[in-house]
Structure formats: C-alpha cells, structure tokens
Amino acid sequence: MRMGEVVGVYLAESAGRPMRAVASAVAVAGQGLLGDRYQAGTGEWSYDPRLYDDVTLVAVEALDAASTEFGVHLQGGVSRRNLHTRGVDLEALVGRCFRAGEVELRGERPCDPCRSLDQLTGQPAKAALQGRGGLRATVITGGRLRVGDPVAAYSALSAAGGLRTSWTRSRDPRA
Image 1: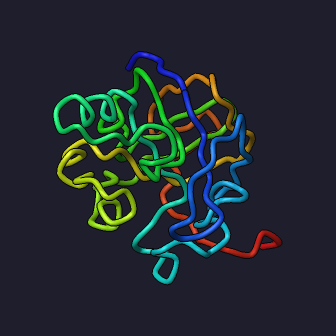
Image 2 (image 1 turned 90 degrees about the vertical axis):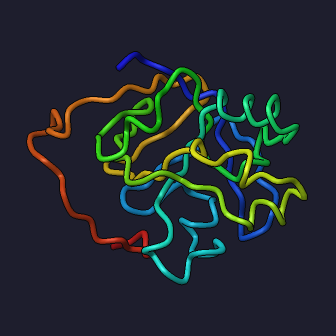
C-alpha cells in the first residue's frame, strides 16, 4: 500500500458541538484523542462502546467526490471525522494495523454515514458518503498525531512482536 498523509485533525468537545481544526492531537491507547467527545465519553454514541471506536478517518478524495457529485460540502470538521487523509485507501485498512505518524492504529470497520450527519449539516450527507464514509479505528499505541504525518499500513503482526487481538476500553485515563 502506498503511503498517504494526514491533512486534517479535528476534535469536538461533545455531541453536536462543532469540530475544530487543530495542528496536532494526543492519541491515547484504547481511548481516542484527548479533547475529543468520544475520549471524554460525551459523544452521541458514548452510551454504548459497541457503536463507536477511538478515532474516525475520512479521505479528502471522498469529501471532494461528495461535493462534485452531490453538491454536499463536508470539508473541514463538517464531516464529523477526526482525521482527514489524502492518498490512503481507508477501506483496505479494515482489519489491518497502520501508523499515522507515531501512532499505531487498527482499522476496525467502515465509518458508514448516518442520518445524524444529515441533521447536523442540513445536507444529504448520508447519501453523498454512502460507501465512502471512512474508517473507524482503535488506538493501539498512543502518541501525537500531526497534520502532515505519513499514513502507512503494515502486516497485522506488529514490529513490537505479535498479533494484537483484544482491547479493554477504559474511559479512565488512570487505568
């Protein structure tokens, strides 16, 4: 897989709050991005950990296509995704480990759009992003994510020595 890059990092303090662009964010293993609604437990789906993952990603190519094909403008934080990437086949990362800068992640499942995005944006975002809504990922090894960081996949067997298959989600940063 060719190397892509992070072109945007976005956080929201709680459900429905605007996403704000940041130059970097700290990723915490098994929790998400410090300062983001899901790491804090204040996201729309925080009541059920089966409904969300630590970090969401979307390809800017998909956002551009949504704009061109549907007239739906989701650039910046409007997409409600934490990381915007360029040159990354996010669909190919489902079930795979990858790095974004110094952070190790595991692609869990597609980040299919929902009606909530339609309601928040006042646009038919669900239809525009169908089949290209991005990726939900778990933070395996934390660190700082920065705009401009390279994104690259590698084998599920990490260089740290083994297949990582289970996680216990903890919202308590002391755990």
